Image 1 (cartoon, one colour):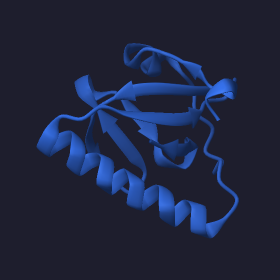
Image 2: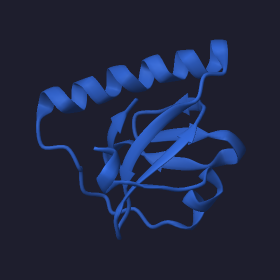
Image 3: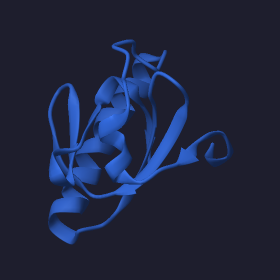
Length: 93
């Protein structure tokens, strides 16, 4: 999976454009993503562990290594108010 995703800085995410279309096809994968986000949120808040988020904007697939500060139904909140729409996330590692 790493080969097809370009690693970017968290600060660059604010300049990206995100379509509203869901990137995952399977219901099980969507449920797994939610579970992974909840786990990553706990790791970030309790132990300040950085995780890798694999996501897709309107141009290409990207990855960022960061700490998750918050999760809503529709957005993942990173430091400095940077957000990634949940429906554009492929995987959290």
